[in-house]
Length: 388
Ligand SMILES: NC(=O)c1ccc[n+]([C@@H]2O[C@H](COP(=O)([O-])OP(=O)(O)OC[C@H]3O[C@@H](n4cnc5c(N)ncnc54)[C@H](OP(=O)(O)O)[C@@H]3O)[C@@H](O)[C@H]2O)c1
Image 1: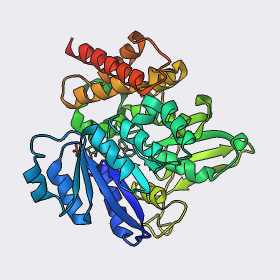
Image 2 (image 1 turned 120 degrees about the vertical axis):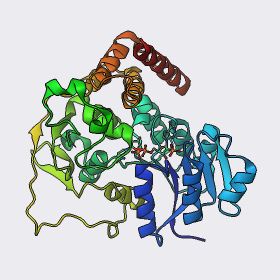
Image 3 (image 1 turned 90 degrees about the horizontal axis):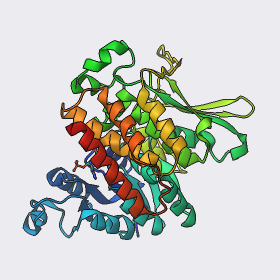
């Protein structure tokens, strides 16, 4: 029997997915890929499945091209194919994985993640949307089933590493660092006219388009504040954000005695991914780390709130509680897609999020169906605002 840790990777064809493949490639003696999932890009997914000889392959949205004869031609011999959210949930829960790395975009991963938690799998969580949508549901399920949620988002992974089992009463605050995104130095009066191309030119990180736009608006940091609240069970007032243009200090924890611990590494997601997949073990990284023989500057500056209204809106949603963060996330997703499609201007993103939060009543949803219904309502409302 294999002693390697068995990994299911949701979102294998994405940016986190490809960094994960790099980590697995570098540690084939420790890690084995047993399942891969994408949304709809079958050819790319099948190529990964062949490269790693993966026995379980799934698509959230299999199109007509995923016909049996084509699958037989594209997938590794003997591989089983899983269709739709039910299929992906089955793949995550029943295929013998030790760790399910949730790195697909959006909220489709919610059901598969809950299924994996119920089956006792360790969850390495890159996706932040599902905690924003259903943080209480996911963290309660993890507690009930004794499952560990290991953050892969670099800021939260840094905090996880700094906390290292610290007693909650010793924590004064968590300090999330933010690069400030593509427009951190753009005069605010020019923000009304910026283009998708400009928003996608992130100064430090190479990521998928949605999260790169979210970095420019800082909706991403807003999502991360909400994510941190659920992952670390702290109050929103204990979560601060500071601009750190170099993206080398990934986040910090301040303890009650004033000591601050930070985690540093170059801006490559391979560090956080590898940490999460091997935890609590460690092994040499797959890319070079910092070189202190070279001059290096680390700067920190306060976050300008008027430049980043999406961050303040995330805090408002968190304070409102209930389904407000689900509305925040859904409205933002719809608005970002519209901005990327050139249907709205950059500054209309926070406007749509603000109006959606103001018009959809906050509810105390207690189950998945209720939360998903509110999410649909928020998407429809944001769509209507855009079509106006
Ligand atoms: N990139 C980063 O550095 C980074 C850092 C921290 C956290 N994250 C989080 O990690 C997740 C993935 O980010 P990414 O940058 O890797 O995204 P990405 O490059 O756009 O890749 C997204 C992946 O998810 C799949 N996908 C896209 N839309 C989907 C949907 N509606 N339902 C189900 N699957 C979908 C894609 O499949 P197809 O290829 O078939 O479309 C692809 O495999 C996000 O939740 C993001 O917030 C990313």
